[in-house]
Length: 207
Image 1 (cartoon, rainbow, N blue to C red):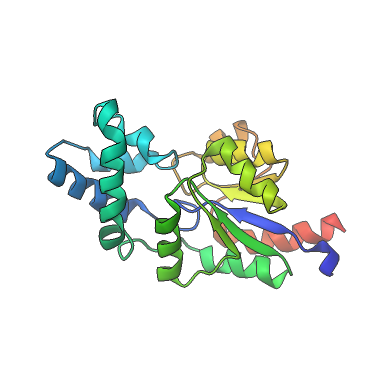
Image 2 (cartoon, helix red, strand yellow):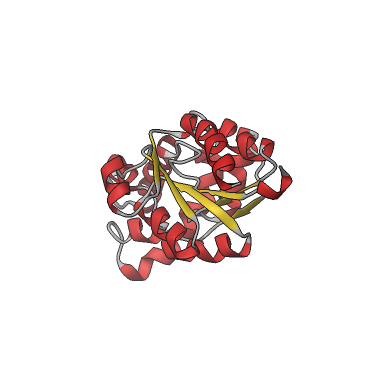
């Protein structure tokens, strides 16, 4: 069976973790600290792209890099404890391991904060690669020879396709199932609770 072992990549925000409560609290704190209005409820409806793409909606372009540093600095004390794992997240990672494969996390999130989330939740992937979005994720997926990439955003679908990996999408983030299919996802699951069953069917099909 070992010859069938594969590396599976997972996105983080809204794939493995429900980052909305923590990120909402962070944006509220950032708003208080900077004196700039941020609609935190709106911001958490469009998670996925890099932080700067959200901040540009609220701050002048020349301030975005500085404000992003403030956000990342306050993030650990505000967002980590407030962020739960999504249903099936731990089981999905475990299913990859039990199949003899490797599970990696490839995310647009600032890598140190991504690692803090996973450590807090007791999730231990084989590697965590941060600061990559959409097609950029293909760099890490190719480097780790990932055959499958699991994500919740059309950007994740694009990253999987750019890497030549099978795109497995979960409809737990801002993109509904039909949008994920239209973007080219090979498989669309309701959430990660369906992933172990899918994986066990997928592996024999590759033999």
